[in-house]
Image (cartoon, rainbow, N blue to C red; front, side, top):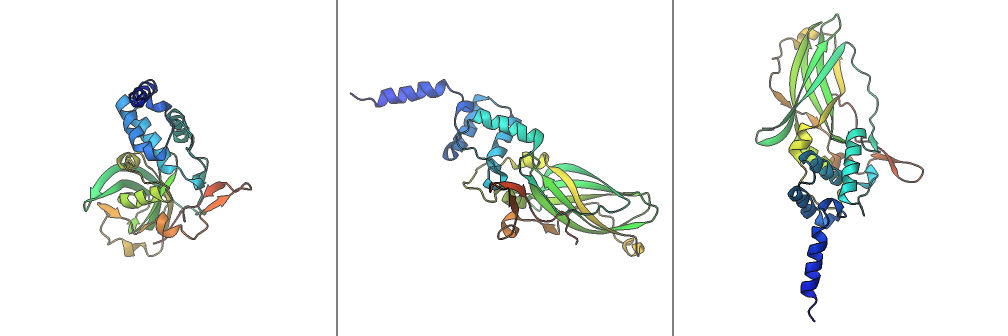
Length: 267
C-alpha cells in the first residue's frame, strides 16, 4: 500500500488547521514563515517588523534565545521589548554635558546621498548662555525599536552660535554601517532587515558635544551648514568590538551589560 498520498494529505490538513503564529521558530525555515505570516494577514505590518527585529537581534550577548518558541510568543516578546527595551542594556562611559547648550534632535527618516542609503536627522543647537560660543563637534547615539543601540556617529562642526541664538544642522548616518552592526555575531544570514522601518523609527540621542567660548570669532567666518553632513566617525561593531571587553557577565556567566564603545568622540 502506498502511504505517500495519505501522508501528504495529513500534513496539508494539519498545516491548514494551524496558523503561522502557532509554528515553532526554525532558523532554516524563517524566511518562509515570515512570508506566510504576511499571506495569512495574522499580524500588522508593524507587528511583522517587530517579530523580524526580535529574530535579527537574537544573540547570546543580548541574553535571549528563540529556540522552541512559537511565533505568537515571539510577537508577545517583541511587544514587550518595544515597550520596555531589552533585558541587556547598552552602557557608555559618562560624559559631562556642555554648559549653556540645549540640543533638540529630529529623525528626518530614510533617504539617499550619493546613491547610498542614509539615516537623515537634524539637531537644533541653542546657546542658552550670555556669551557667544563655538560648537566644535557632536556625537549622536542611534537606537532601534527595542531601545537597542545600533550606531554611534560623530561630526566635526566648528561653527559660532551667538548668545541666545539657535542653529539647526543636518546629519547623515550610513545605513550600511548600521546594517553591519545589526548583523554582528549572527549565527545565520537574513534576507530581510526592514531597514527603511528601522531608520524611520530610530531614536537618536545626544552622546556629547564639544564647545568653547574662547576665540569664537575665529569660527564666525565659516559658512552656515545648511546641508546634510556625513559623519567623520561611525562606530563599527565588526571592526571595533572584536578582541575588546565589549560586554559584562553576571555571576552565572550570562551577559548583563552591552558596551558598544564611547558615548562621545571628540573630533
